[in-house]
Amino acid sequence: MKLNIALLAGDGIGPEVIDQAVKVSDAIAKKFNHEINWAPALTGAAAIDAVGEPYPDETHEVCANSDAVLFGAIGHPRFDNDPSAKVRPEQGLLKMRQKLELFANVRPTFTFPSLIDKSPLKRDRIEGTDLIILRELTGGVYFGERGRKDNGDTAFDTMTYQRFEIERLARKGFEMALKRGKKLCCVDKANVLEASRLWRETVQALEKEYPDVEVSYEFVDAVAMRLIQWPKGYDVIITANLFGDILTDEASVISGSMGLMPSSSLGSEVSLYEPIHGSYPQAAGKDIANPLATVLSAAMMFEDFNLKEEAEAIRAVVNKSLAEGVVTEDLADGGKAYKTSEVGDWLAENL
Ligand code: IPM
Ligand code: MN
Image 1 (cartoon, rainbow, N blue to C red):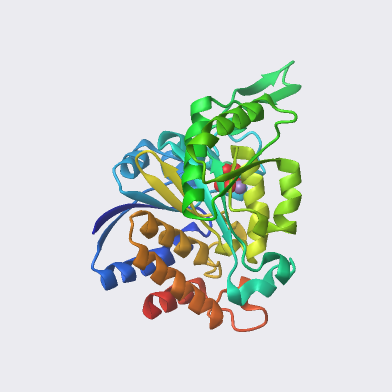
Image 2 (cartoon, protein in one colour):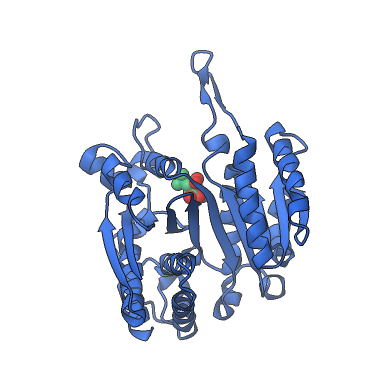
């Protein structure tokens, strides 16, 4: 297969972890006779510095004309502490999601056999966890009307959802559930929010089209609690943008390290693959960040191209590196801490 992949390294540890995913993907391509053409492009603070804009049109062109986008991370502390900054790296991420219509963010949560005891949660609670949080990504309060009034003393952001936005996400959720545990949970705040009531109404209307899927409805505050009490109770969760943002950070604790969790963002034309961790500026340039979330994101990419064996091979070698202790300092636990680049080399060699 010939693949054209846009490569958006971004900020902080982005370039370092992306390098390892490229190494591993190239090794896979060699082994399975594929050809990958990487098309690097600028995003985030790096793009602001170069061209004054976090998601330049040229970058969008590259992404829109690729088969997929592999993405590192975005964000820089220089902007976080400056509320008056007019352009921020994160705007690039939001613009990219919107322009590429990446409406469904797939964030799986699973455990690694060799890491179960690294989780702050008890083994019997989390062993065997295998759930997906499907987060709506191009609507809701992230993109609703916002502003200031009363001379700037009142600020508002609005959660707005259209039926079609909920429906296309919910359909993805139902289809995923059918291929997995056949359970779908719609997570909302329908006891308070009108937008959430539209979510329920829309999902309820779809139920009869998917009779094999068992559907439940839960409030987000209760799910925040149950998710870490009994994650095995969930299969596919569908939820709004902001709720999904919060719940997926929470869920990453189950796996033992945020440095491990991959994600995909599915669009109508092109999809994007990225680790769920951020740019981790404190570690930037030190060659210490955990590259596995990005490597596993590349595995999700191969899987979506229907290259299942390739995806499986990546997951297997990642598990092997964890079992053999070829890990970065976040997982070293007193043992040897490998460099980011060493982990990447090891994975590529051991495929
Ligand atoms: C994420 C991040 C982003 C979000 C930020 C960086 C804008 O937290 O991808 O989860 O809130 O969506
Ligand atoms: Mn987040």
